[in-house]
Length: 375
Image (cartoon, rainbow, N blue to C red; front, side):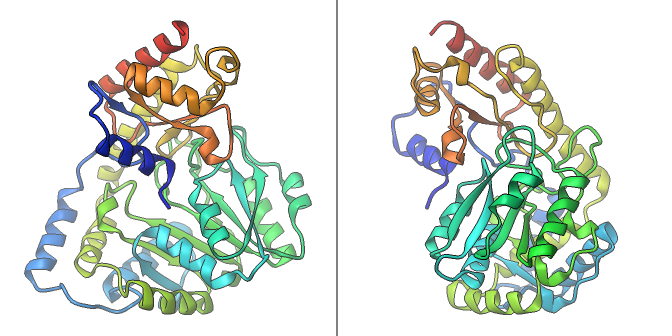
C-alpha cells in the first residue's frame, strides 16, 4: 500500500508534467548522501561484500548501534535484542505480524503516518486512535482507551505529520501506562536526531523501561538522506527479535549487505556534520512557518520534516474538503502537498520542507497565499 506522498509521486511521474512544480509533499531529504557513506558503500562493493550476511545484520554494524545507544541513552542491549531490517517500515510490519492476533488492539496517534493502520489491519488487529492533534497528547484520554485487548501503543516523536516532539513528561506517562497495563510501547523514531531550537529530545530509551515492554525502530533514511539504502533497525525483547528474524528470513533475508557498510559509516560521522544537516532543516521549517503563520493557524514544528497548517476556516465555500484544496493547489498553483485527512485528521494539509530549498519555500508560500486570497 502506497502512502499519500507515494501515491502523489506516482501520479506526478505517470501523468502529464506540471510546469514549475514545487514539491512539498515528499518526505525525502534532498541533501546528498554524506560522501563518507557513499565511499564506504562503494568500498564494500569493491571488496566483495555482495553476498548474504547474518540475517539480523553484520556484526560490526550491530555492535556500533548498540554502542551508540549506550552512549546516547545509557541503555545497553544484547546483540540478540537487535535486528537490522530493510528500512524501519519493514521492522514495523514484521512487528505487527509477530505480536497481533485477530481482534488485538493497537493505540495509534491521530494524526499519524497511515502505514500504521495498514500494518495493523493487514494482521487482523484493530487500530484505535488516540488524539495527538497539533498540541500533544492527553494521558487521561489515552487511559480511557486501554482495554484487555490492548496489545501495544505507538508513539512517533518527532511526529509525522505535525512536527511535534513529545515532552519528557509525556514519554514518562506513557512508559508508566505501558508498565501498569502490560502492553508494548512502540517508539517509531524515524526522525530521531532532527530536533529544532535546542528542544530536549527524550526517547523511552532514556528512561528505566523494561526491555520486554519496549520496541524502538529507527532508520537511516531521513537524517542521512539514505532512503534508497533501505537500512533500518529495531531494538526489542529477544523473543520479538527472534520472531521478526524468522519472518525476515522468509520475506527478504538479510538487509542489503553493502548498504549496511554505508550505515556503519553514517554512525561514525562527526556530530558537527549532522548538526549542519539539522540546521538546514530548521532554517527551512522556521522560514516556512514564518511565511504562512499570518494566513493559517499553524504550529511551529519542533523537529522532523513537516508542517501541518489548519485550513478549516477556508472550507465550505470554494473548497469542500482538504483533499479538494490540495487538488486545487496542485492544478492551479503547481504546488504539491498532501491532505490531512490521509493522516486521519481532516481540515489540514501537510507540507514537507525536506525536498525544497529556501527559494522554493518562498515561492511555494507565495503561491499558496495567493491561492487562498484569490479563490
